[in-house]
Length: 380
Ligand SMILES: Cc1ncc(COP(=O)(O)O)c(C=O)c1O
Picture (cartoon, protein in one colour):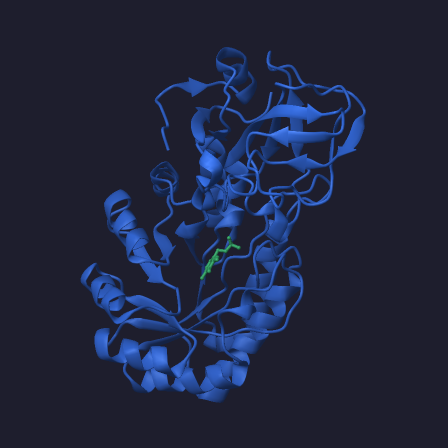
């Protein structure tokens, strides 16, 4: 992504010096490593990172340096990336549907942990994966609390999960369970229901679980008044696992994407125009770094800078905000409160932008070039 070796003190310095016309993602390795340590110290089990949320090599390098030793991978590309950037780390291939060639290649590349949510995919794995590998059955529940429903695509019912889990053991694999409560899951209670159901599934299957993977879903700080309660979630997971499994407590695994990487990046966009003093047009939008906003809602952790890097402090005015392409869906959801004294050429900096931003950028209409810069601090 064109990261150079210069370290800037803060985004405002970069903006003042370079007045960039392309969107810029500012990366703070210090914040990423601090978040990784928070997971490593607080989560009662193995912390892995969901590579899909931000697969940039510099992210993996910093997570590796902070002590992350496992990765949730969804494709051969991601497996090869981890083999290169963090050799020796555990890889959990937790995309429950894979082609036969992908499974064979993953085995060749050293993957020994897979997930399934169907009998047909389990049979496929049975023929290709060496005995002794871990197979985690993914189940889903109709629980609320996440930004959108992950159960719409993956995960089977608790009843079917019990059948699959028993089969996993009979086939000579290490039996585990996995779930994903849904991304940006702000309600810790979602984990409660899932963990208690996992214990029932294991009991119904007559299987002692090796590991329980409690997914990603750990929330990032997206809305000013709503700080994520990571430590509460960690404590709840620990307590409920003890209560539900008693002496048969499995080892725990988590695979955060958003909760790990979001806070380490801020996205600076430039105001291309304020049309007739009303709508704001930015140089990035839903086909670029802001792709996720229509799916999971606006981020209101925004500050606006003039081209000298000074913060605008006018009273907030709700604005409709468009991205740079000619497509009318290229619009941020709802309205965004922005300082009334904002001008063309200013920078609107969105905080908490590290997850599902770089990974999903397109070049639609010729836009989508993101610069990246490393900073010591993301704020003044
Ligand atoms: C299997 C799996 N694990 C973890 C994650 C990461 O989720 P999040 O970014 O909500 O933490 C995802 C996201 O799609 C996933 O599919």
